Image (cartoon, rainbow over all chains, first blue to last red; front, side, top):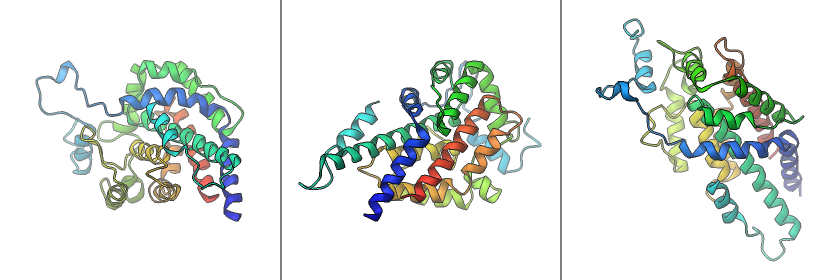
Length: 71
Length: 219
């Protein structure tokens, strides 16, 4: 019974703070999840190059202390 | 949309035997609705944090309706911020905030927030937990998994699949990987000097993290 009461609390709490505006998020969120798996697209400028400055590469420069070399 | 339907279908039958009353069934349904709403909130945050929104998404964001609840107010502000923004300006804002030359104003990785270094122990712990949950990074995605956007995406998956993941799984993941730093991250985003549109994202994130942290203690 105690755990059931707690469960109701959680539900009511989440409902109270979210209200109806969460329904509007549904309309937005369902359209955005579709393109989550998008591959990185370098665009026309980088077609010739195999080197791509992805966030990962930038993170490497950052951690390896290359900041001063990299402009 | 498909995922939403699938979740409802898989958990639709009453979980208790013949004694399960209609009332209980309604409660299960209400829980599902809430979990789906939470999953969508996380999905929205993930999308906003993983890349600058395009104009189509901005149009939709501008239609978000606010109300008087804490989340509703944050949604209202986000909608307003979306009407003032364009994809072009947001690409720059996103770059200044999270990427930058050398580094952005904010480094959106758990490892950096918790240890001061990228790709450190918190990332290793996260990978272990993701492995346990049967989740892994998509091949097309090269960022370390402890990016705030990725963590929101994981939370979205956990909340939207009650058949595979329990509330306890979710709580554990939240407490280990988000609650130690996510609130601080969103507060920083809210007050970042390069943030305009993203300040509203920061507010939404902070409010939502506060609610989530509170809700997990209730269960």
